[in-house]
Image (cartoon, rainbow, N blue to C red; front, side, top):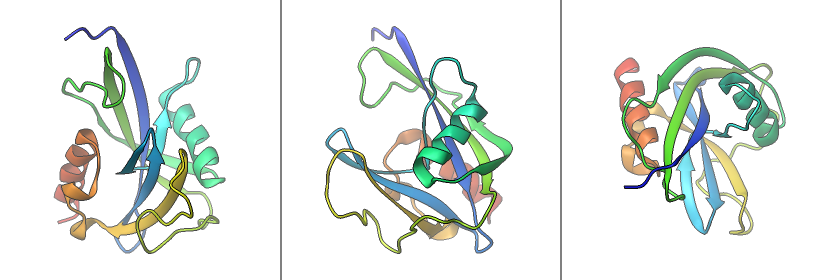
Length: 150
């Protein structure tokens, strides 16, 4: 293995009063994926700055970051990029105002499968399975979340 670079990604775990978590269904890099909302940290910003920026970009509205939940504690090779190690940071978060963007009742609810297509949906934590998520670290975070919401 010849890892030479880091990719840092930051995610929001947003849970409503029904104990449903917000998921992002996306089509990127030729692949359908289901993950937690968030994205890549850019040079010159910290993790919480990144997540606040991503919220504006993805939701068109601000979030409150409540608490750190999990940071990668294992080696994880980046899924899409050779020679890269992935570091992911997850925060509990909430919307500052009621969501003003479209939240669907079904997965991949967008018109075209084109790079950057994205839709959101609430899923009960208790009914969510690791097979519903696309990436290994999200699956690990789901296990930790389920322990809290037994």
